Length: 131
Image (cartoon, rainbow, N blue to C red; front, side, top):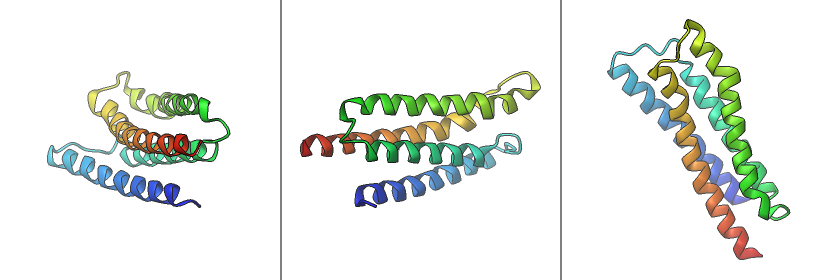
């Protein structure tokens, strides 16, 4: 496995773990119960999907260089689809989606998206220099 991908996955896992810890810590400080927020699942699913998206982009970076943006956008759409299929029915079981439920998915989504964007940007810069 190339060093770029290994570095990315390590940084990604550590950042996801730290972000989860901070998120949980802040909620605990505020006295918020995390029982129905599915916080671990939200982080795990976002990290796995984002890692898979960057890995796929890495594999196809030279063959489909001009379509990398579409892969990236498709990955974001996939993550939203997972939210609406997996999390939204659970969060909305009581008939409403409150702020904490919304943030319990979109904070991990945002953290993963930032790291994913930086990694794909570096990957594209390195690939464009190779061509």
